[in-house]
Length: 126
Image: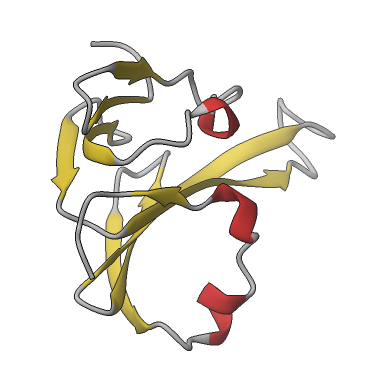
């Protein structure tokens, strides 16, 4: 495995994501996701299933000094999913491999400000 993520849909079809620069998240077909295998910053994959919906984003910062001065540098990847009327947020540091796991209610301001276009459907029935 070398893609950022792999998806298995309810109908048995599959989708392979891209990389941190071109994730292909926008290209995911509008079908219910049975499971997603997501590459953590250390190269290991985690499997997520049984969620109502899932969201992905990459956080970048502009390097102000150093060898990448003036360039955008990826700092974090974020994977959020809704399960049992809660949002679970995996914030992954791509440099230190540290993963913070946060939990929000559905009315959380951070969650409400996320672009709704990038939520993808899971298979949890609610």
